Length: 450
Ligand code: NDP
Image: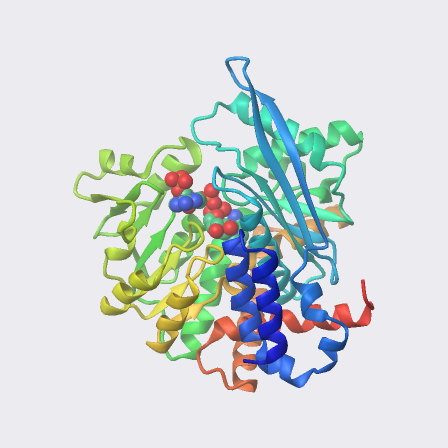
């Protein structure tokens, strides 16, 4: 391995030993950057990699809030402003009980390269809290969001840092966060948050963007390898925002989606998933996916068992879309997917595949659409929302969707061209990392040692 890359990874492990997800994300990126680092000896002279793996700023704060029993609850909030070289920090907020500094840092680090790949001027950031929205009333969610924003507002604005949604943060939460920001700042600054409702500055097609974008990328990747989506059997891990709209677009493209999941288990419906019902259960009623069976008694529910492959990955499929959370597919699961004849995997979630699983899948000729590139449609459309906010103008659904389609097509082209340039074959994971890195590296070199 290139000694500069090797030393940098070693130092990251020494300094961040208690942050496994962050170390994993750094290793995956840096190892694939070797051919570029070999070509650019000047990077080492200015400690470019050391700076690349150190966040510009981490903000961690207390979030006290009152529950419905008038009891004070306390959570921890984060905002990681990782790299602002190419534009204001941009990245979602995650509310999930598993959130910690390691997860925040890995997400913000990944976001830096993803945002670069979009071709839009946005830097990398991420935030969130270990607050668990499950089972909370609307009022509790609102009080939590207001308290979270009381602190976050000190660190964001439309030129500095623009958060959006992620796991556990959808239109409802963005609404409460925006309301509190507007109240404290006494100004209507639409571009400070994205993923807003259409009634106060949101963009058409933002809700659909990550899932649709994933399928546009999949279409391009399959086409480039003489394959397509027609009549393919698709299974999807997750049933949240990304999963739902990936399912919708996959169906529109002629595939058959037979399974979706939540953290408890998955439903299998051999005649094809009833997506309207999933939307009703998940977007409106906020129920468990198991309830699908109340309307479709011929479908099957499979419960997850802790320590075993998530049920959704045991189903035979041509195309698998992990759209839930990180490290969902480990080596054992990857082996099972290959055994079941998977052709392609599209990462809707961030880092859903472990490094060993990625290596195994690529070695076995599975086409892997890497998260940084394949799920970049969400943040790209967030940037389009910011543009519309600045212009005080709204594009139609079709206009935004067309721009999204073009952006995703272009991102795949960059990955494809980079894989040709560096002889990477179908390793689009490495080519996405390289393509995303180049622009950030150029901007950091141009801006001096900061
Ligand atoms: P949602 O909160 O809307 O949905 C998350 C889904 O994943 C739910 O079905 C959830 O089930 C399931 N899940 C299963 N296991 C876990 C777990 N351990 N932790 C969290 N969720 C789990 O989130 P999104 O759809 O917005 O995000 C899904 C993934 O896509 C994440 O990795 C996110 O970072 C990534 N992403 C999202 C973007 C966006 O625009 N929203 C943009 C780019 C990436 P349950 O309800 O049981 O928790």
